[in-house]
Amino acid sequence: MADKHTNLIVSAAPHVNAPQDTASIMRDVCIALIPAVSVAVYVFGLQALILTLVCCAACVFMEWATRRIMGRPDTTSDWSAMVTGLILALNLPVSMPYWMAVVGCFVAIVVAKQFFGGLGQNFANPAIVGRIALFIGFATQMSTWAVTPRMSSAIVNVAGADAISGPTPLGLLAKGSAVPTNLEMFLGNINGSMGEISAAALIIGGVYLVIRKVISPVIPLSFIGSVAVMSLVFGLDPIFQVCAGGVMLGAIFMATDYVTSPITNAGKVIFGIGCGVLTMLIRMYGSYPEGVSFAILFMNILVPHIDSLTKHVAFGKEKGGKK
Image 1 (cartoon, rainbow, N blue to C red):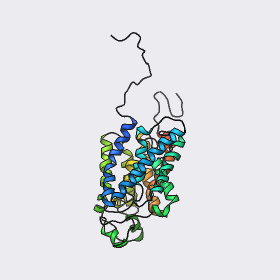
Image 2: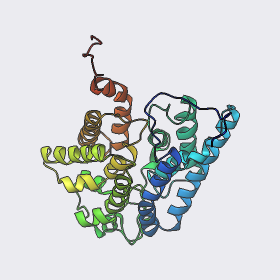
Image 3: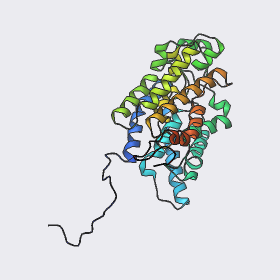
Image 4: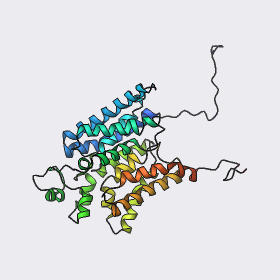
């Protein structure tokens, strides 16, 4: 028999216990990124692993230090800082100096996340903000792509046998040079940011997240589908455009961020299509051959308006607040 002095805690319905918490979700994201990290290490070597560890350690430390300085509870145990470090690292060239990567971590964690109140309050994906800040501040280093013997002959031949850097597939396409085959693009025999080289590895991670019900496939499919459709409109190879650059990484791991993406299915479709269309417009008409990060950031800003336009009408009310 229960103790008669036991206090009952009464709260409003629904009385549902979620099987997942923030830490378990973030751990699943880390697990899903293992294939992409593994391919990066295989293609670029041990330096890729070191850069990844530097970004993860810097993000976790900066979150702990910032929360401590601000007198707020420690949130490093929720693994969100680790995820930010992983995603930011995978958005960087393997040759990125470590101190510059740490600057990106500072912008991502301190400026884009903690200054706005921490997880759940940030208006944009912290890793994307960190990447864009690095691109603006260190354009040369962010545009220097390592070449290794494991890469496509199309890249190695253009760069030269003794070259340590060379153009990305999108750069080759812009110059009218021969590009890697779609199979090479899919498997990861190309250069670029560490996490964007292998579409296969990213798809494996995405399927894992969908099976674990961590993400909905709506945004990735809308994003990737719109890139494919826009490619056909511009007379380009849709498979190449989807596998090149950061489309897969952005669609699966950055555009699906809970905090900075819409909550309704209709909003997710609008968000994904917007990201894909903007990506292709930047690629076709911008001075920079890639546009994924800028497209997602712009759509992040529009998320409150997308949610407002697509929110469900409460039972017994009409739009506009009338009964």
